[in-house]
Amino acid sequence: MTSDDRATALLEAGDHRAAAEAIVRDYGPQILGYLVSVLRNDGDAADVFSQFTEDLWRGLPGFRRECPVRIWAYRLAWHAAARHLRDPYRARGRRLETTELSRIAEEVRSSLLLGRKEARQRGIDRLRSRLAPDEQTLLVLRLDRDLTWREVATVLAEDGAPADEPALRKRFERLKDKLARMAREEGLLE
Image 1 (cartoon, rainbow, N blue to C red):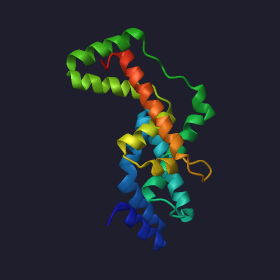
Image 2 (cartoon, helix red, strand yellow):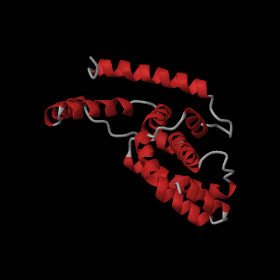
Image 3 (cartoon, rainbow, N blue to C red):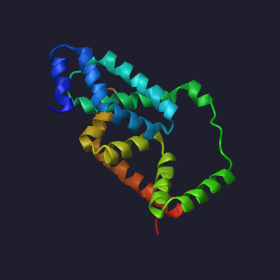
């Protein structure tokens, strides 16, 4: 029995508490990893994960099962992250920026202490961190979580209407081009 089957069976039995527990246990680590990738801050990801679990608990009675539980959970997580990013209090805050010299020193340490492959991966992670949250989401869902285009469209749906799959594919192509251009500029691609 898959995680989705288990959660669906619990929902059909009317046991929302057990369904919520199963969803968080089965998909929680994936969802938290996704939030860390998108938000690039462990503290923010933990806060948004808490909001996700609240949204899950509140939303379970109204979940119509029009998509798999896993996709619905990612949709809840994406919307919680988007609300967090739009929060006016958060927007006023400013992160302490490191100096240019510290960034260069870190690059040197990375190159010398890590192997070439590890340094390249850190470079890719650095490029990904410069992407907007919606771009991060598209990459994580499609590449890291291997969701289909229909599933990605469902996660990114606004007001119940799925996002346009061809438009998402085109956006993904532009994003790949953008990443390739950034990688060439950083010297990660020859």
